[in-house]
Length: 386
Ligand code: PMP
Image (cartoon, rainbow, N blue to C red; front, side, top):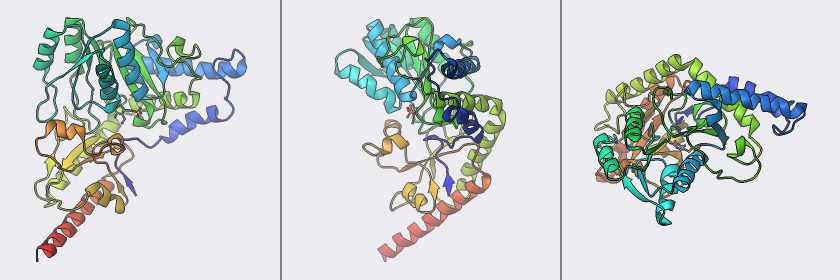
């Protein structure tokens, strides 16, 4: 079996499992308890918060643990709209549903109007248009993702941060796909909110964090106990938090070697496919760019494949890839990202996404399998013409 869908989720790193184990066994205390059992876990959570803060160039007081990026995005968007009585949001059509859905809800309820920034054919944000939108509505909530989860494009969040500062707008960026993969030093440029989900960088599922710039005080979205300094009620997911911090630490410790490896895998997949004899392969977004795209994502269209879904065919060979995102597979089919940037309908797009655990042999096997599927597909089409 080959797993090539690391933008959906990643395998847990064995070192992370080791870091989690004590909190599954001996260190089971409730971090809010004042006795020894609680203190052991509280100490780990404090250390985890410090680790994350240090890696991002912020203070520990600005990091809050939540259940993942979906919750973090909802919190940042809904609670900043409420707190500042914002009436205008600027986003893009290729944001994750965990951003679009809460914004659309506020639009439906009459709280805000949404403007969508123009994108070019490759899915890049038109910064001039963003400035034009800010000119018309300076005090906007800007929500633009750092890297797109389907096509891998990286957006220049530093440039957006500068614009947000100039216009006194609030800038939330969905960094779910970049935390641990692209270095972000918030000492260099400010953002108001950013988010992370541990399972995207070899940590456990169901745990993440939100960075809330200390100039903001948001109301909690989940009411209950006074955990997370009152920002998020509910006993902390100690097991998850231990894993999250360790996973992020490893991502930074091994940053260069991981980046080199995923870049090699990506380039190998691209060049092997280009030399495979399969015609008209289309690389979506900035897939072929090394600077404007994640080294871990390639999104490809195969217009020559006549029948069936390549994702399903590859699955029958034990190869896990994705059409669009795993989350959109649960919903209404099709990719809202691809349809936002491409004119032609119904082009099947396939996302290959790598991690440090993939090998060059796996890439070769994937390409050979696609070539086999293409051949079989073409033979069937010829037979049906006869
Ligand atoms: N934003 C982006 C860009 C994502 O890729 C994902 C995960 N697919 C999310 C948000 C949501 O993350 P989670 O499911 O871990 O809450």
